[in-house]
Image (tube, rainbow, N blue to C red; front, side, top):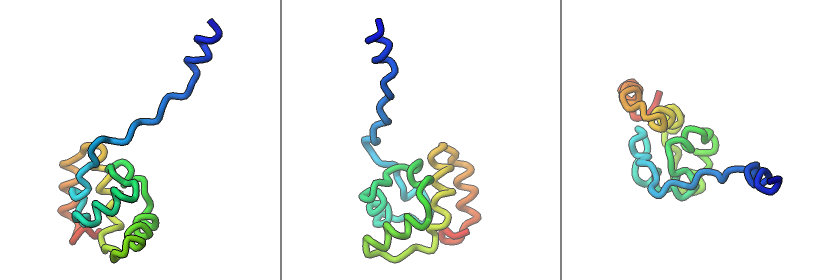
Length: 102
C-alpha cells in the first residue's frame, strides 16, 4: 500500500510540445520568416510567445541575422489574446496598431 501511495506522489509529466506549431503569422508584424525563426528558437505557440520578453525576442531575431521589426513590442499582447482564443479582442487590438506597432 505504501508503494502505491508513493507512486501517486510522482510529479506529473510536463505537457508535450504541440504536434503543430501555432500560426504565429496571425500576430500582426510576424511574417513567415519571423515565424520560422521563432519556432526554430523554441517559441512554437502563442502561449510561449506571450511569455517571452521583448528583449529575448530581439536577441533571437538578431542572432538569426534579421533586423528588429518595429512591431515586436506588441507581439506579447497579441499572443496573449490569441493563446486565450480571444480572436475578436485580437482583431480590435490589431485595428488600433499601425504596422503592428502600438
